[in-house]
Image (cartoon, rainbow, N blue to C red; front, side, top):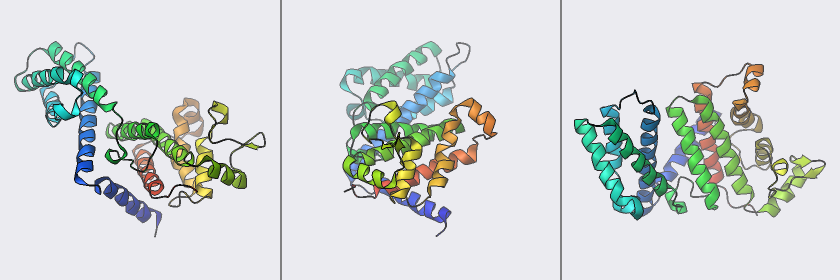
Length: 285
């Protein structure tokens, strides 16, 4: 099976896992996705209308109102914001239908954004996330946030941002898996020796910046220990690690390498495949 076919098969399996949960779990996932969609739209409109000379598009505000209307305020919005959220949502609906004060609409969006942000801070049960295999809630929140940001960056044609976030997602996912059993990780690292610093294998649990495993070391370890089999280490380095380093402008200039739509989409698809593969692994023992 060629790499492209393998990627498609793994990506389809990853996608199917998102919907292969029971009805209540599926509803939770839909609610979270609706909250994120509304928050993304709200923030996008607010960014684009920061200039006082720029008016608000009624069509765009209507799209936001439709996204907000899909939310059940009694379930999705915390009580302290609920009354104001419902009031502001209604005001935005009136603005989308009839026009009116741009300043009032912007103020309404600020309150709506605050309510959505607070709602998204609630820690999700594993079943309601896109990463049910991730046990650590902090890592799970990071993965949710960073993968969403990568996808939004691609949607907005911000290719470089997309690639940077894809590398962050892979790094967090690999770290979470290896920290489930630090003893196993360290024993394997001593055999493969990919993470030595000053002749000593770096501790996977180290908190100091210089002692943490780099993305290169995480990828090399994962491939050497058959945690990631769909792609070899060189492919992962070239697609996810090297382009991520182009956040430093001089590296981009010296290498005469630029991130474009193709490389960003490949990075996004590859990290989804890697996540699917990690999600199928049993805990290290």
